[in-house]
Structures are given as structure tokens and as C-alpha cells.
Image (cartoon, rainbow, N blue to C red; front, side, top):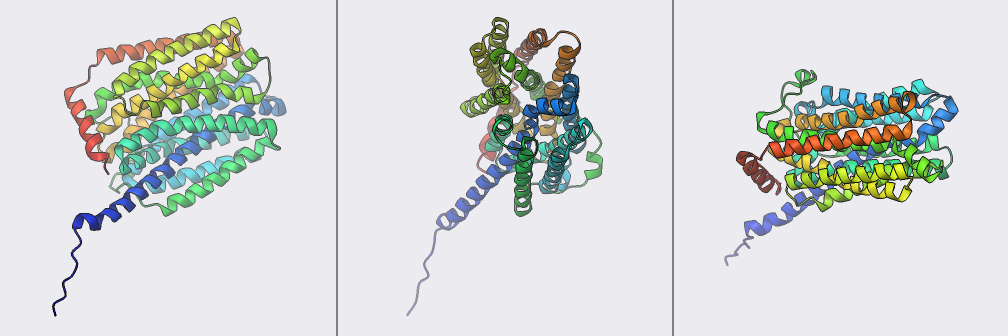
Length: 425
């Protein structure tokens, strides 16, 4: 008697394995996105505490601005020095090192007894963030170009919004606010470090790790045109974030005639929260239309905000903040999605780090200048008017760049091919 073996079609046999692989990639993508969220939340967490630090330790508003600027400079240093490292040694070692540094920064914040310790904590935190953003973003792109680019745009808004509001609520309602929020973040970083140890490496090792530590902002030829379009928009929208991060709490307190830190963190929460929602809403639109919309929303939002501060309208201020949030989210995701699909696998972290360099220059430089103007020259309201006007000018410059640089046919084809072929990875 001859027994026939059942033949299982190849497509049926591989389907469960494909489903498992797809599910694993999706979970890993979600986990990597949580790292960006926690890093950006940690960067926003000290903002509601600055007033309490100044009260306890007696430093001036200018010192607060210095603390803000030191963080931005440290992020830039981390991006310039370590931004390309994961393209050579893999994503996991860089991510693990960044998480360890973030944990160390949380310990320093918890033990801080004065301005000096606070500055050191912000430097360590900035280096951790700068060295890791390119690696975690590149790892998400390794898994899925389309969803990875979306997650790179979505996660920063979620992190900034949640960090600002949760920290403000902790200061207002929970005991030991200068310790509790940092201890909670320390636990989060510990769990994420364990997750990085357990995850599979998404990148490939290749020679040149030591050489990659030398700052080099050269870009691959294939992305230079699109990068030149995206850079002014990214600078403008992150200058907007710097406006709300540095002046938003003081403006909110003046308009609401309240010293509540919850209100102080509310403007940044609204801006970043609306930005995150906008990223999802515009995720299926083409990058250039999203950039046009973001510039229009950015200008409209800032105009409404400036009119509200002039007329002492708190409702107008928050409405303007929400409209500006559409500009922030649309501009950031449009710039990211315009460039990243054209990047070769071996250059992802480096190009993404370059995009973040432009963003953090926009975040840090105008905010530091505004801090000096507030304390030494103009005062709060006049500085807010000047800062907002400067953001509008930056947006107009970005619009000019968009209009001047028409999309190349080759880039359009590369974008379509990259998203189509790689989106199924």
C-alpha cells in the first residue's frame, strides 16, 4: 500500500511565518517609537520645574535660558559626533549607550542641588538624545520605510506633549516633583534598555566606525536637492517649537493671570499634541502639499497668537497655538518624508541626524536669543512679538525655497519606488 504525503502549497506554508515576521516588525517598530517618545518627554520634563529651581536656588531667568541652550548645544554635539555611528556598528550598541546616558542624566536631575548640577544633567541628556535619535530613527526605517518615516515624524510630538504636561501635573499635584518625574523616567529607560538587549539588530556592521566620529555634514548626492527644500521648513517649525518652549509658559501665565505650572505646560502640550495628530492626518498626502499646508498654518497660527498676546486674549492664544501645531506637525513630517525615502540603507542614520541638526538649530538658537532679549533688552511681550515675526519670516523663506525648487522627476520616481518596494518589508 502506497501512502501519499500531503503536499502543502508553498504560499500556505509561508503565510503564517510571514504573519509572525510582520507582527514582530510591527511590535519592534512600536517599541523603537516609544524610545523617541521617552527621550523627547525627558527633554521637556524639566521645563515646568525651572520656576521652582529658580526659586530654590536663586538663579535668574537668563540662567534658565542658558540651561535650555546648553541642552540644544549638547544634542547638536551628539548628532554631529555620533549621528553616523550606528551605520557602522549597528543600531543596538548606540541605542543601549544612549539609554544608559539618559538614565545617568535622570540620576543627576534627582540629585541636583544647584545650577551647576542642572547644567551637567542637561549636557548628559543632550548627548544621549543627540547620539540616539539617528540610530533609533534609522532602525525604524530598516524595518519599514513608509511606516518608519511616519513614526519618525509622529513620535517627537507625542514625546514633547506628554513630557510637558505630565511633568506639569506632577509639579502641581504630586509630592517631591523635582524627584518623582525623573525617577519614573529612570524606570522607563531601564525597561527600554532591557528591550534593546532583547531585540534583533536591524542594521549591518561595516568598517569606518572611528572615522564616522569626525563631524561631517556632507550629504549623499541623491538627497541634496530634497534636503535643501526640507531644511528651511524644519528650521522654521522647530523655531516655532522653541517659541512655545521658551516663552510659552510665561505668556500663558501673563494671559491667564495665574502662576499654575499646569497652565505653563499647556501651550507646549497643545502645540505638540496637535502636531502629532496632524502627522497622522497628513500621512497619506504627498510631502510637498503637506509642506505648503504647514507653512500656511504656521504663519496663520503665529499671527493669531501675536494678536492674542497684544489684546490679552487667552482664548486667542490657545487657538493660535493649535493652528500653529498643524504647521509644526505638517512641516516636520513633510520634510522627513521628502528626504528619507531616497536614502540608501547604509546612510540612513547619518542623513536623519543631519535633519535633526537643522531642527535643533531652529529649536535652540532663536530660543536662546529670545531669552537674552527678555531679560536684558525688551521684556516678555515685545520679545514675543519679535520672535513670532522672525518665525513668520523664516516660514516665508521656506515657502520661497519650495517654490524655487521644483521636484525632479528622478526624485519622484525614487520616492514612489522606495515607498512601494520597501513599504512591504
